[in-house]
Length: 95
View 1 (tube, rainbow, N blue to C red):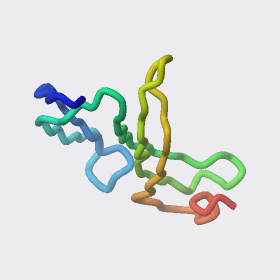
View 2 (view 1 turned 90 degrees about the vertical axis):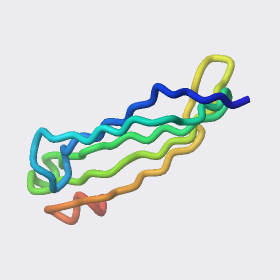
View 3 (view 1 turned 180 degrees about the vertical axis):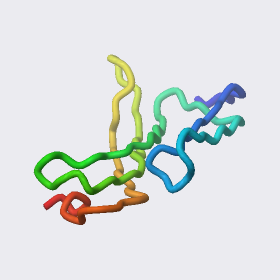
């Protein structure tokens, strides 16, 4: 069963993007909330570890499909979507 929830707000920060620092975009609207399935999208900014140096940054998002179980919401499938990378290519490629 689905229902409408008019109290939805999405905020995206400029961290990891080419936009000026400390900026954010806010969007308000409606969505359909499903009782047993869901989608979660969250953004990330990864910094390199000491193995590859400090000259790389990448950003993107995780698109997750969720399913409600008797013990609560669980991720049933995850997609990693890289949207931006700069610096040492070994960090981005993973090798």
